[in-house]
Image (cartoon, rainbow, N blue to C red; front, side, top):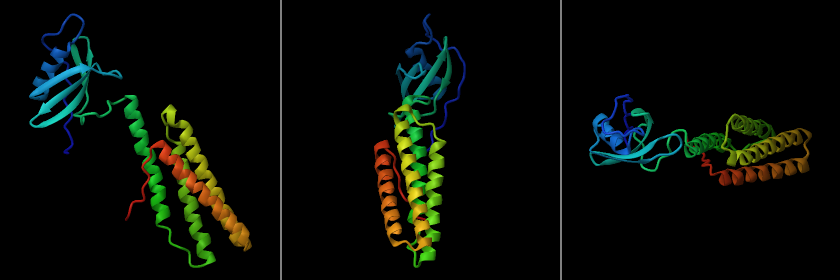
Length: 214
């Protein structure tokens, strides 16, 4: 769908408002006049938005959040797809977090997916270094997020799993230098377990982590 144009915010007094402030009916008239909509129907809004209005332009239906100040329209959202979260709402905050966290884990997965299979011990040491860097970048990016309170614990678990994956990978590199086959095996098992934990926590958080093909 083409990017919807943002409604112009004006502070004209709408006709038909009652003593208690701008009514739903007056807001509907305002939207039809200022926005050029064929139809507008407003219901009480949430999260600081006085009204949530359904509007129609041609054959397309959208939703618009409206803030009022006294008897004036103070602010409107852009044209939102029906069912979208209103800006500033808990739902919008959650959706923003999920999008950012999903992008972070997808970047890590894309980098890891592009690491080739090592042909010798020297390549294995170097390539595991690339894996370590990808995991560290993910953990650092996750720490900079401000997750909703109901997902904060999950993010901490995800960071912990990433840190454990880094520790296991570093143990693998150290074991390679020592030519310690058992140490290598233990480190690979620990890394696989940490990676499985990462995937599990990401699913529980509702993240969409995908490796993007070049």
